[in-house]
Length: 353
Ligand code: FES
Image (cartoon, rainbow, N blue to C red; front, side):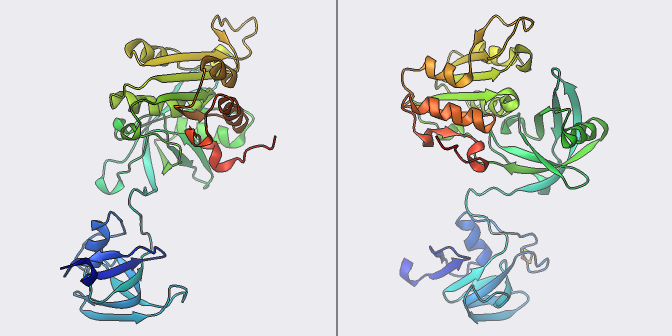
């Protein structure tokens, strides 16, 4: 059968139709193309796979029904309801599916995690170890560098980078800074310290890294300020677990030495891997800090260390002023904005110069 004679299936507002094989159910076509939609029983009973037929014709096997429609998507609330797992398109169809996920699109879930441990790392940063639910229906996947949101019992939410790599499975790590003047910060820490469970929403964020997509000759810079290190830690553990051999430079900047709250870990990565270099920088050490290492601002340090940044990907985790200062510095060395990745770009516009 040639492609022209196959029935076409148009989904939601997408313009490129899917081609249906003979006798394929709508659900089978959708999943064959890598899309996902709500579904469970796959035999017409649970009704979770409901869709709206906007145009075209389909035969629903169970409950048996001949579905026909010829309206447009803008006709809100109209259309014929059908079940995707038992409907076979018999003419070109246009359907609307609530909860449709495109190929590669992640499903955000709200889950109740066990709190395994809350451990103080320095003056105000705590390592929080969470365990995701064991049931398959509550499994969730995330990429290295993504974040989650803690959902408090009163509904307030706060975002934290996931400090562990996807390879850690159900175990999640967060680095939570306690801002003593912040009511929500105190409430979150108190909740984490005194509860057995916490509700979280994940995965979130477009600043992530996948080892499989890294070009062979590319240098990677992971730049973190303060607890931005948790995002770097997730990426680094993923890169190491994937055996990536590209040159990797980790920059961790803080105001004083004590703010580098896991000082031995990046040193260990560098000691055990020839391709990893660690550059800690402290900006305001003062007399009592005990810092004998490099004194610099993170953007200046990176600008100083590289003759060119033309073939480098930078992942930056910190405040908007820090990230945009770093972008300015890197652009002076030939980096294009598309080579820098940060969650900041999603919520803070670049300041006018
Ligand atoms: S998946 Fe249950 S009715 Fe379709």
